[in-house]
Image 1 (cartoon, rainbow, N blue to C red):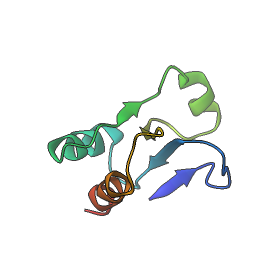
Image 2 (cartoon, one colour):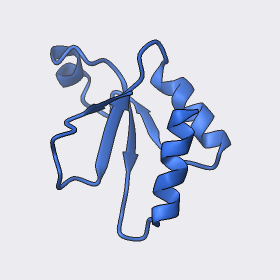
Image 3 (spheres, helix red, strand yellow):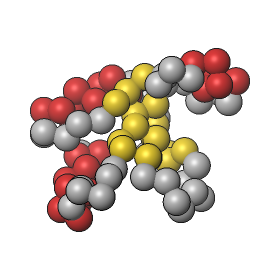
Image 4 (cartoon, rainbow, N blue to C red):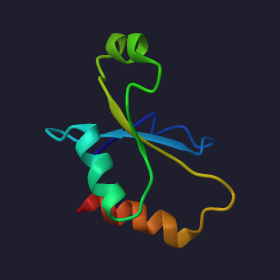
Length: 79
């Protein structure tokens, strides 16, 4: 798993890619676990192509997300 902009500490948006796994497949697998993420180019295809990133999976957190929900996301990505 490669987290994009992992050095950014003030954002609640986490975009990541997994080698040899399409982001839509990750989104489908997480959805089956009740975890909502977005996958694709996120209206930024020219930028992502320029950065040689391609589509990503993105999780957006907010103040109402619990520690348990973050752990569920991490567990889902691990699997």
